[in-house]
Length: 569
Image 1: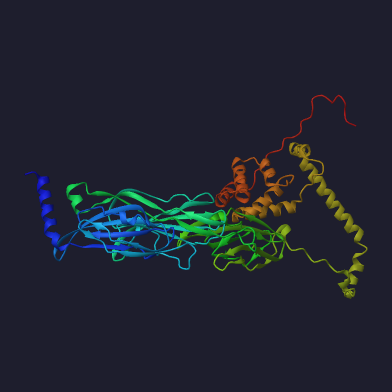
Image 2: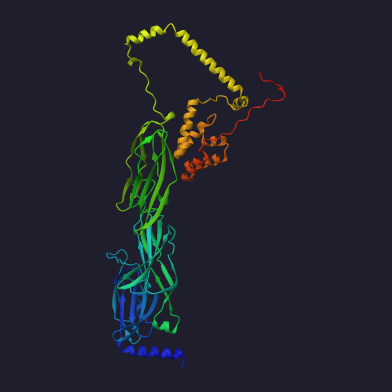
């Protein structure tokens, strides 16, 4: 006797042994009341070997949808129990109290039932706890939950959609998909899938959770197609013995309808619907110094918003230069809806001593929970700016001639009277010293004719020579800025150190000779006014300008070999 025949005989003996004790057929509805247009699941649990009941009595009041079935084999106190579960999707064709007659399955019949169907717009609305059809009820091996963050969103409001696939059997393969909504909305995946375990109605399920971001573009009814799953799962006991142990399983969630509201007339512009928006300044500064940069970081936290919906963060600081770096944002999906944190760094250079007021621009947003316009704002930061170095030093107070005491001591008057006869000799000595200094300077210049000629040849009309004291002050400030990594101060001081001074950082770069300094200056420009890396720019500036800028050597003007044909007068 072959092995397959022996297995068939064993299975037949088990069924015959269990047959007298398993004569049981049960029927249940997933809901006892539904709205017109919704669906309901009729579940039949039976031990009859016939797999398909006669559905003819249902066709007068119901449309027949998906039909799924699964088989189970287990042991109870009386022996082996083999059962089959059949799930039938029914769509009511009319409203009212609809009878579900007894259905014949094998040599048994199901119990009759009654379903209440409420017309659309009626006083009672069925609200199932789970969005499910076909095998999507909790008693089946596979079902789908769809959770929508807000059923009545506004136009352009970010709505979180969470789809959960529950399965109580091993899945070998399959396709889990969420169809796109019709025109007028976009649905995009958010984040990555997660897997958890849960217990529903006493049965343990594995859960595959997937998140989506829904953005309605116009008001009115918006229909969201239900998610679906089609694949192969672990089959029952007998299929495992006589087949490959697999069967096709499927689940599908019903279509959901949202009522999208138009943008309120009282809403601000730009339009930002959210659940919560707040502004913060991390580690606000307490001191400031004229000419030296100070940094602050502004954070915006928003619940129910994505980064692409947020306005640009702005900072106002009258009396100071403000350099803003590109904003950095982090999107998350928390509690079934999007959340975002945006950070932006501002470098502020006070231009003079005194009071300085830093004000972050408020952000207007619409509270979708309270239906009200709100503003996220921060109290202004008030600083007292200390005196800086060089041109950032506090100006000296003018001397009030009227406040000078005219009653000088008598000793001072006597000393002045004694020095008055020697005043001409003193002035003559000062003049001789000045003449000697000028003669020495002229002799020094004669020893370096090439440099002098180069300066004269490259000088432009109207160019002014910078005083030596101012040049040394700027050089000292520049060295401090390079050492401290103050990008704003480096960008401001480098053009003033050129000879003659130039007006912009780009012009200063054109006069530099060292290649490393030219590349470091380009990184500085990108960090301050583009999307460059500020930290990389600080390192490049520090390495390239540690010994000061290296300017291109000016070439002396050469005298022509022949006199001009038409000499200038």
